[in-house]
Length: 341
Ligand code: AHR
Image 1: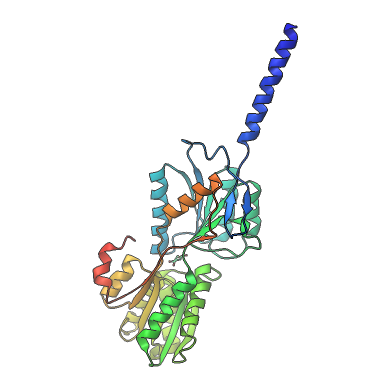
Image 2 (image 1 turned 135 degrees about the vertical axis):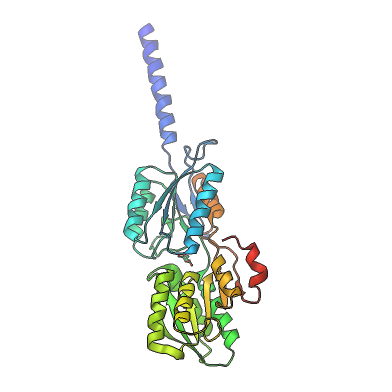
């Protein structure tokens, strides 16, 4: 009889333990909803009050002032919230980002933030994350995938609209005058390069006096922007009336190139770019850059809110944008003091 009671107690204890283990191993799984939002079913381990959230962050690199401000903001926000942030710098290489994501999966992080260098080629590794029930949140740049459930949400701006704002600014500035434009594109195959080009072209389409005469990638870097601008000046010379740069760093490189060629940036040649970093405001105040369209890198708070919601299984929209505007020389002096990046 005593033996039977002992056996019963052991069996009951085993059942309780098994139930507890099953409950704990229920990581989030992604489900899509008809309203275009994505929800994750909660993982009891990650939504436990007091448990430190572990987030893997695959960053592109440090190609621009914007990117450095983005990294700093995310790291500071993680520290503020007591998040265990695992950071990986891919040095502009997609293969390094894929390796980093695989490492995060092996480390069983609670969520992954990915700033994808290019739009395509992510499907297999995102499927790995999905299979491991780890939600992926995209930062600033989008991806092209056949299944939208492979990521939870994109925290980032509308790049097409940014390009459109830059184009509209130039259209208004030149009026009916002839304007030959050279374009410095961002990293080939990246969402901002593709979308900012498309938006700008839409804005100038019905204005035949504005024409893009040269267009080449400057990889979002100041030094490459300068080199490409050198080549544009060598082939087009005084034929160039305006520069459209997909980011401020390349515009700043182009300014150096124009000055070296004895051309006055901001006067002989108009320059409009995207980002709104401090150095762009300084260049506007110096009269060398004409306008910049804001693209905020301060995405940390919205990214970690999205991570929190994802691990708790809360529905989210497919994109979480931020409001942006165009600044020109007329507002730069009174605005620079309030710029945060
Ligand atoms: O994805 C955002 C872009 O990437 C920024 O405009 C650019 O400066 C950065 O490198």
